[in-house]
Image (cartoon, rainbow, N blue to C red):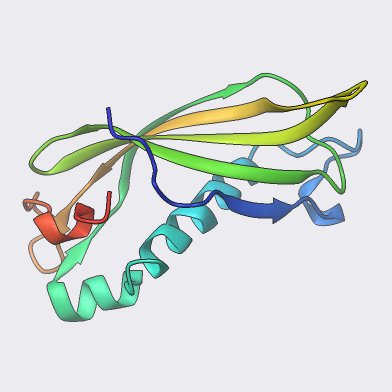
Length: 141
């Protein structure tokens, strides 16, 4: 398993992220996690557009599984981490977690509120067939 060497992506929960109960709407986690992956690319001087135009690859999500542990709330500051759990030739399994700081007395800790494991495939932009991930994409890991 590869641990992330990048700082976590930080996200403040705003009103539009919440449902009628004031909790983060479950579907918003997918958008938050997507923003985190976009930042992961940006830290490597990459973007989805650059991957398409310069390297001829797309990185669609093929499968995902999400778990919800605690409700996230308005104004929470989320720390999104991602770990590549498995890397194959044309697919990676990425685990993303949304955590927030909690204080109990003098002790401050991180609490996982949601996680997802995403299976992302690399495909050719023209044929849409699986294509090997370029090694340079993961060199900074």
